[in-house]
Image (tube, rainbow, N blue to C red; front, side, top):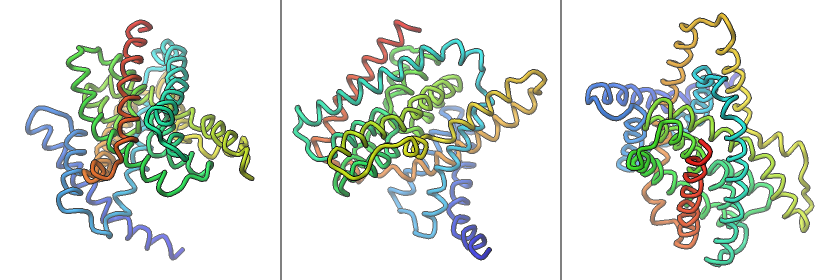
Length: 332
């Protein structure tokens, strides 16, 4: 009973910061008439954390942006047309499985045989770049006995590319004159972490954001299988064994909520008012969460990231973005 009030008091200052900067981002986008609130939210968060830093009292609440992002994604399901998902679903699933499998093999090859990385770093870079960013790095690290140094290199590298691709992909999509659906699927297949994927998608257009999120969630759903595969591979010299329980523990549970909300919103008789209200709540949660996402973008990571992990992921990103772009234009 006593932990509840203390937990609330601990989270409240950081949450108030997310809300305040989120409202400022909304007002800025509306007043200036260009950009989106999500881009301003990321920008404000990054400027604050890199200019002044975050006091320790704000960190617990700001870190709660991850939960806000997951809830926002769940509610985003109300904006998804199930008929569109059913129509494109098999193609997206096939592309996703192919991209993830291809990506893991490419990163492992580049890391080990081109740039000479050793230890668990190649596995962490492979899962982080091909599945779902830092969360995949941490999930796999816990099952293959990765060292803190391996985790630090992989995490810093992924975070650097999260920041770079957040800016680069919308620009590239505009230069290539991509449709909203194509851009959404492309960024969902090629970029790394869920937050930046959604941010880049919605920066391009509302439709692109929805398809980017849907595609990225499909990628995320493969994390359990990949963790099992790596655990089995490395467990040949370890006491820990892969198991179905491990699969469920790593599976992104909010993915279930996303499709459940989508199913409810697409039921006959569901009012547009209900769908609009849920969509509005999702929009606000994304804005608040993206302030926290921006706070996590640290320019010092550019200096701390080793050259070889950076080059490994850079080569992978160039390859996978080109291959996936070509596949999307052929299939869609």
